[in-house]
Length: 160
Image (cartoon, rainbow, N blue to C red; front, side, top):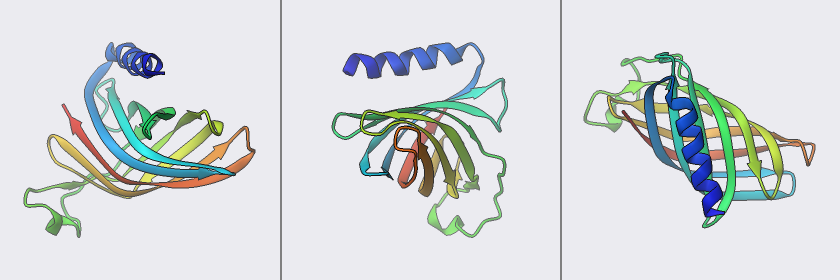
């Protein structure tokens, strides 16, 4: 299983690196429930900016708890950036309010394949880091034929 995770992360990074303009990696704390199965864990994220486009990124995420829980491939967009926001008191440096949306597919041994949408309503960004708080998740499991929900409590990403 460790080989699968390593190969998945390496191959997805290498495949997209030919068109990469930006790259980020991060950690997240997430939990989700679909049908009768639920899981939570620590996510390891890799995100690659495509064609020097600041509004469209490709990404992969592997969730561990303490072993493999799920893997996903997603497209994310961050269409709005502003310095005029009510969350400036949270940090000493100037931070951009930069909400985003992630759409993708996920595989989990407990619930099979599912479609997933995550809305990063509270995301703040500076030149090197992105901080996301309390991002709701909606998913649809093909194997259970049911909708599910979840939340990413915190995601911290380093952008370079």
